[in-house]
Amino acid sequence: MAPERTESALDSSSGAVYITTMRTLLCSIALAASLLALDARAESAAPDFTLRDLDGGTVNLADLRGKVVVLEWFNPECPFVQRSHTEGSLVGMAKRHTAKGVAWYAVNSNAPGKQGSGVEANRKGQSALRVDNPVLLDETGVVGKAYGATNTPHMFVIDAAGNLVYSGAIDNSPDGEGKSPEGGTLVNYVDQALEDVTAKRPVRTPKTKPYGCSVKYGS
Amino acid sequence: MFRQVRELSGVWALVCLALLAGAAVAAPPPAPNGSTRAEDSEWVASGTVARAVQESPATLDVELVARGGFHVNEEYPLNFQPAPSAAADFAKPRFDRADGLVLEPCAAGVREACRARLPIAFTPRTAGAVSVGGTLSFSVCSAEKCLIRKVDLAVPVEVSPR
Image 1 (cartoon, each protein chain N blue to C red):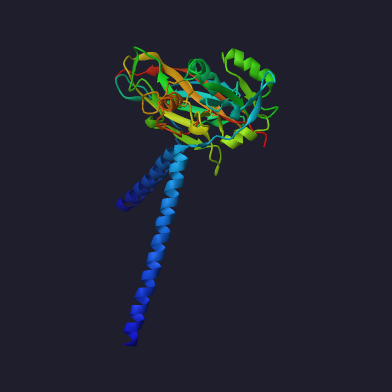
Image 2 (image 1 turned 30 degrees about the vertical axis):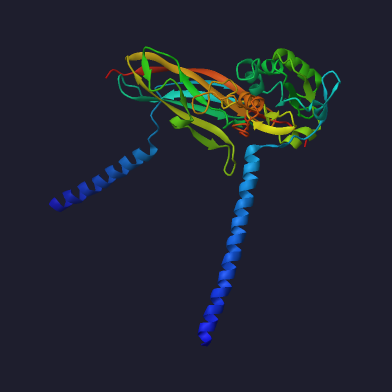
């Protein structure tokens, strides 16, 4: 009898352990899946900021609520930025979208003294690359880090409600020229995101891996 | 007498074997048929053809070496686009990572690569002195900056008749 009781006690105890383990496992899977889904959607409130443009004026993201906003991490001396603006997907792109009411800002988070930093270098770059939209300076890097900007160009699309709906590369051609698209067909992810936001549907590719130069943060 | 001859031939056979083995170890690599080199302070790009026989498959070995604190930007789609030539047919109009790109780290335990090699397959169509080449597109980066370069390489090659 004793062995039977022990066996049944063991059965019931291991059953409870099994249920607890399974419950923990399923909860972990569900939590991980929801976190992954959240990350893949890249949809979260865009970090607010106030930055100065090259003329000393200030731009506050909160003031742009109601508009679709594109933030393009910028370094006028980065060859990927240069090629994107002279040969690749960024040629005329900001102009095309600002004409439709999109607010487009270049943001430079390079620290003072680093490549492409400072008012003069950015003015020069703006003119050479025919960038008509404002360039905002984020020399402390606080805004760049809040967005997780790692590269130039690194693109972010914010919908009219202030949600970050796209972050990543401008396109799938990491040469910056649009001549080496992965899979053979050039895909402009920002064009796609703006199309989806305008059509009020979920962005089809909410997150991609950015390419280009690294952002030259101060620390 | 017969035993002496046999012993002697055995010794000579051993000597010959040793000499052959030594020659095999010490044999220098075949001299390149033709090579070319372009460089700047941050990189060296070169192209070498070891052997070329008319109407036989040959290889143009393209190599990029990053230097001066720069490394090969692995995210950039390094590629080689052969220059059209009546003297040679290339297997493809563009060679890239999928065509056997080999990257070598800058040093043991370092993630970044300082050397990239890409074999370019071609078939010489005419015998004699020809030029084989194309454009190598690549990017090298340091902590401070990245460079993108498109370098023309033209290798003078002596193609043997078949």
